[in-house]
Length: 271
Image 1 (spheres, rainbow, N blue to C red):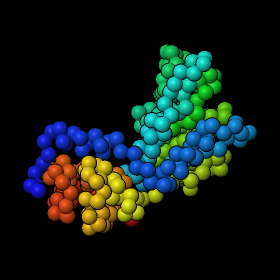
Image 2: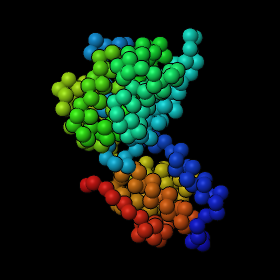
Image 3: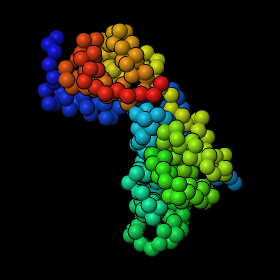
Image 4: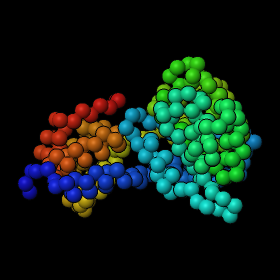
């Protein structure tokens, strides 16, 4: 097989397969089910939740996106229902922006109207009307870097929980320390249930490689699986990047093409 980059259509197909990939690793599948249970269980006197934690490039945001894909908004008997929303926290550096973003996410009219406190009160009222399930806060650690600003966000998610709304913060390991800054929050979020593992089972790596390459798993030799695992240490994002780059640069997966792509690829991982 010649070693050449694929034509544009084939390249785009590779990228689209990578971008649409949901990786059904058992832990992640179980976590999705746990999140669904959180969203649909009876209201508790003391709301608790799960914090999704993982190293950089481990698939945290993808997991939340898969939940949103499985449970999208729909029209109920008396209006729209929102099983979940996701806020990308770096886009909202001020607490005032955050309240506006919450209202936007549930389709509220004129979401910037009023003060921050006014908007939060309106959000609480509307959240019950739209039967809001989960509030994913992606890269929540980003908004707690500055102590004063971070405290405001921690107070707000505690208020959300006090209003019986289920918040699911997403972030790197630092997030666990951020939540511990408030003793009440530390006891409300289970971080162990939400800590994403690396992908180390050969059968799962083979499935990923075969899917992105658009081939049968039998065509992925054990040596290719071993090489990808060894070079990426099972960090899902780095694994996907290496596979995609190899295919888009060389058109197929062999030890030779993987090693060639690896030389030009900055994989950084934490042991």
